[in-house]
Length: 329
Length: 275
Image 1 (tube, chains in turn cyan, yellow):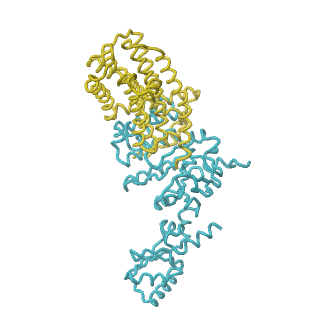
Image 2: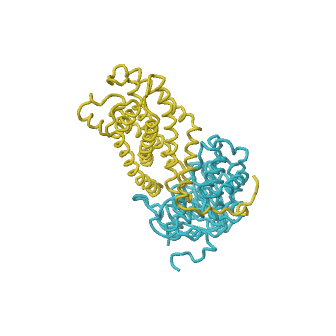
């Protein structure tokens, strides 16, 4: 049947050619996404890439201008009430009520999710335990730390045990420890069968959590795959070269033109793809010697998702634009 | 952190009830929230108590001596005016609190729930009613202390309470529109002032309208605050009633009937224009 995703049982979220503009600015240029049930998909992109807009459309907060989106098998436009009953949303800013206590916040949400009083009480107790807020349950939320607010926020979106959870930048602004505990909670949710769509600007977060990563930039999907596949696209080995003197940096860049991935003039670092390892390395060093550029240090490493990201979005890399065009074709 | 099971808990099922039941239930939940805000926020409690006292004392003792209200003493004349002014200013909290909710993430949370659309606004308006009942009681008490001597019967007191509540409801719905329209918290604060201040001064709140220039007087005598003030005053201290009570009730009901659809339209539109 056209229009309706055929395999609702398998896919929790199906998005086809999603488009959205605000006034004259086109924010989404046709996004396609499929999220398998029980998996974690990370929408990875810089600020303004369209991540939040996508989440807002999927959680029925915004109507799309074009394309189709199904959440739990329901059309986000025509069956918005059913969609809302299937999802939990944790937005970018903690959506908690500062004057109420943690317990009151959860009870309020439970009642608005239309649970019976008994169920509401039980879920509130369970969730306070699950997000480690039992001790703070009776304190007004405005006295909570940033990490505690986020955990409460997450708990609030889990009240009705929704099968699908949207997390918009769940760890932005958190300290490293709160971040780790948030990661553990997200993993735990997925292990227990929830489907999670999260957005992030942090590659390590996508790397750590996601089964599938979709990289978006300027409202387009520019790459997708699991973390390993994406990393292998920029080569299996990277070499970071630190050039001895600032004045030589331009010279060095010219010398390794064909191999260069990223360049940082301030730090005098050139990152180079060395797919066939030592052979490439030897050649590069030869080029640099010919150009009479001295190398201060040299490190070989596996590419990180940061490299992938910078490479794909074209920030600083020569090859990136070529790559991007290739993908669009 | 415990690793308790997320989906292995006993499944939670939403209760099945009618839409009207949910509108009332959701509105009750949101009202409890907004009323809790009054109790937990020191500045709301302070302004609730200080504003009526301040206005009452300033008008009674600074201006009162120079104003001729004929046979009615100024304390008796003033009370209805201060009461209606305070009710109107109190409704500004609906504007402010709604604006705050709209600016913060919490409105997205509410909108992503399967809850009734009007509940958030109704909650703030219910809190307004509570605030205004408290303010009203304080005004009457302080009024007694400065010479207010009503001769209203029990029935007349009930009319006073009823019409005051109806008026509060009307102003609160109007304020809800403002709260959904303004772009910032600052705007929410002064928007109420710009609207309410002239309305209370160009009315029979503090001075008889007879001395005003012709155009002002025409406005003052035909606007809803004057009707409300005159009706309350008539019940409390036996000034002439005329059609004031009916006109006030008609104005309030008209404002409510017009404001409700506008509010729900704005509430839905909000989502489609914000990123």
